[in-house]
Image (cartoon, rainbow, N blue to C red; front, side, top):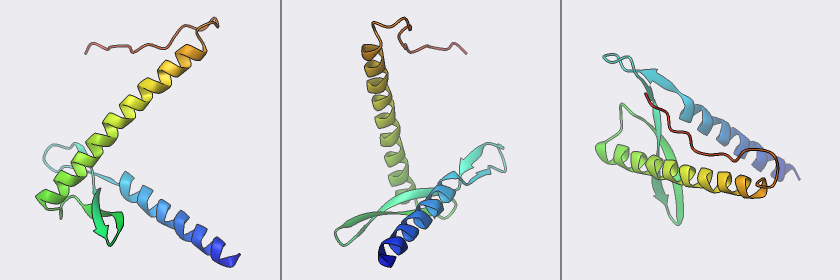
Length: 108
């Protein structure tokens, strides 16, 4: 049982480190705009696909390209899933008094 608790502890610690790295931001000295300091880059380790976090200032072009492609794919996937979720909610709630959820375009 202790092994199970240790494994859970390692997973939770790993998740905490991952979240902290993912959220760390800094500001560009010239533009003042925020940027994410650490970027996840996929690496192969035998049969496993793992991610390591690299400092954006130390990343090679190839590493940044891989990281940005992965993030773009996640954004597209998240947008598609959000559409599915909204369509489901609208279908389930269509007979209730609530108005359906719709995309609202904002003019800037």
